[in-house]
Image (tube, rainbow, N blue to C red; front, top):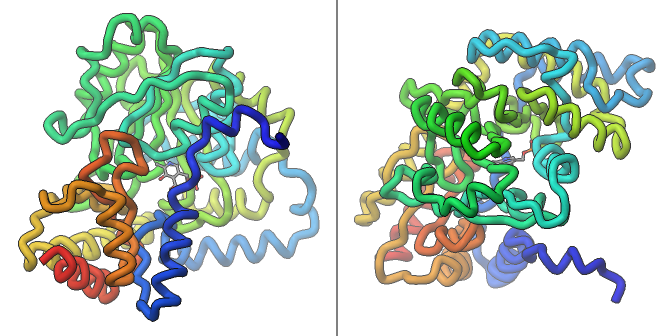
Length: 387
Ligand SMILES: Cc1ncc(COP(=O)(O)O)c(C=O)c1O
């Protein structure tokens, strides 16, 4: 009676369920190794914390920060894009600060969708891609991301009537949960597809700096013409381990950004200034900490994959992200059953693939969010569980 009907469109959060199961396992005496939630466990760079502390001492940083983002932060974003991806951006019209990417991924739909407008979303995909459009009164069409297509959407096989109806497409590479990456060629095809069908592309690039073995993730905006059709969303959460600080940014198409700016200027005042100042220093500061961060995840990935292989579970090595997406051995048909039994019997928490969409069934997402020793121990417990 109290809840709005639109809440019926939301799935109960998988993490509440996992938390419940974790409590039960703990009460039953299990030692928990939590590889479920994608929250970075490593520390932010110390120079960034220093700047944050200094800025927090300055009384003038306690006023409203402005939705737009501080100049210092927006300029840092512009420099970072130019240096990392050779993409030029106008800080006045093509950059907007966000209170985390989650803010952009939700409110963008309020800015773009009329009731019933269709949004193409990845399946499997990060849950906000579904919740965002539905809360804004839109409709969703899941695009199956299949292993045989390297987890890229098969653009040629999206039904024509869907292409004609769709207003927005959301994609995410490196992908959560798939740990899949995109190529520049794919982004070129995507720009051509978007132009042909007049679809706005929203590329969530939250894991841009987490790549391994020398691989560098391409930015969607590197492709000529990308800015005409879409935007890219980022955050400092994963790149600098600042997830709790709630700061992100959206860059690219000025018209899309202008529409989002209008929504946000009515509902928020931006992220606390000291955080923006610290993030600006992170973006313009030394790159070693970012590389070291990625290398830590790479080592953890190797430990997990080697450990699972000892028990006969061969899982491909992802080139990026902070996850391993593992196809379950055949004797486990249900990912939920697998994940909850694994947790109850061994204390290791992973996320069932089905939580990310129907095409996630048969897989689990294992987060590389504990140190190497814990990951090794988790791999051993998982290995014994499947044997
Ligand atoms: C793919 C993806 N996008 C966005 C987010 C949200 O990040 P933020 O902290 O910037 O809101 C996450 C968080 O896990 C994510 O995995």
